[in-house]
Amino acid sequence: MQAVILVGGEGTRLRPLTSTVPKPVVPLVDRPLIAYMLEWLASHGIDDVIMSCGFLATSVRNVLGDGSRYGVRLRFCEEPDPRGTAGALKFAEPMLDEHFLMLNGDVLTDIDLTEQIAQHRRTHARATLALVPVDDPTAYGLVHLHDDRSVSGFLEKPSPDQINTNLISAGAYVLERALLELVPPERNVSIEREVWPRLVEHGLYGYPSERYWLDLGTPARYLQGTFDIIEGNVRTALRERLGEGWLAIAPDAQVHGRAIPPAVLERGVVVERDAHVGSLVVLGQGVRVGSGATVERAVILDGTEIGPGCVLRDCIVSGGCRIARDTHILGGAVLAEGVTVGADNVITNGARIFPGVTLPDGAIRF
Ligand code: GDD
Ligand code: MG
Image 1 (spheres, rainbow, N blue to C red):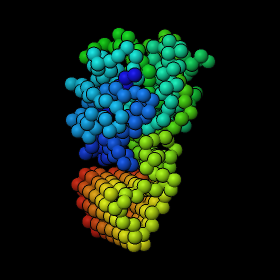
Image 2: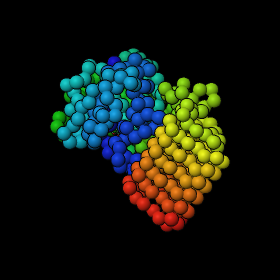
Image 3: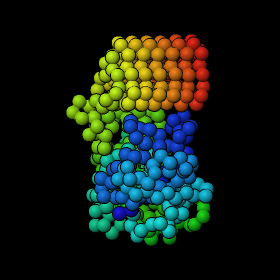
Image 4: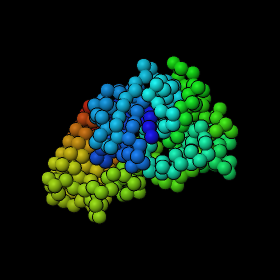
């Protein structure tokens, strides 16, 4: 079976992680974010994948290549202007088979696609949406089902007073190409607002799932997704690398302090004396952690240097940053690529520091 992955969004809510890299190729643990989706598809025998791109398509292509590393064959389809979730599919129509999967490119999940496809065939549906329960459905598409799993209502981004179920669309659909008759060509069309509502009671079905599911669209959820991958809460290809000890340390990494699982330490990492890293930590290639520093519940990307005595907790620090001694980075803070922070700063409360910024010693207690 074929799959189309929509990756044309700008990823604004994930800034500044997406200020320099498009969302599909933002690094997540040890591979591009979209690799988890490709490996999940491949594990269900889906190896013909079309990436529907808009924003910065060339860099996505450069990172992913032909997809063979992830067990799929990749093709790219670029809209001339953003067409929306249904418009993008319409644009890709000449490449599509009679039945195919469509996926939102920003979710981390291990939903059983094989079962979802089987249900789609059994019910002779025109579209089958994977559904998952969430605590707050306001950011998603709310779905009501009849007992036979046909959809009785679809409401995109409901207001709090419209919520009377917790089942939402997971952004994974089995579709019939014939559906595209409903989509006008060459304009921006939203599948959620203009197509699903018209299919209610006309061949739209839901496939409720209890499996792991997370929309990775914000820094907090990006961190949560990282932790869930390295804790094994979601089935991913990384499980093997972590082994029984839940610790993946590259052979040439030097750990003079302590590494507490689950944690991933890549090639060239150096953890100095009395420093401790973990639990729930990813240190990218060449990251250096100075003596006596603490790094917990954090992602530190390639080449970043952390000075002695620093405390980094619940934060994301992109590649190529320099953090001088005794600085604290906490509370959901996110640093973009190439940020320099002087000594004795405190950055917290979800602060987002943009690419190339330099903060002098003792400049902020945020
Ligand atoms: N090619 C292309 N062109 N892709 C697009 C476009 C476009 O114009 N607009 C959005 N996309 C891609 C995004 O990159 C993303 O992967 C996917 O389509 C969904 O867009 P989001 O902007 O992330 O939507 P959302 O998260 O607010 O809501 C969607 O996902 C929820 C589940 O996470 C909806 O489908 C909801 O119904 C659903 O519950
Ligand atoms: Mg999304």
